[in-house]
Length: 82
Image (cartoon, one colour):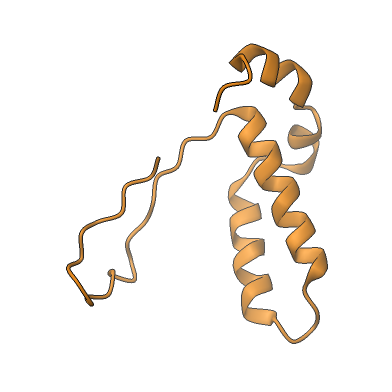
């Protein structure tokens, strides 16, 4: 689980803070699929949100690599545990 810095009550987290998130291949595929679905649901008025979604998708492996991940195989490998 990603750790959130303790910024104190009411304090804002620094804008340049970066989270480090480790995902299994199955989690990465689900994240990619969810972000693509979310992107498809946004209309033309949500440019800022769509921009952030694109930025996150750019950090994930390419579409071909994501498609190559077999959820069934990966979940079997992980024992279905999260």
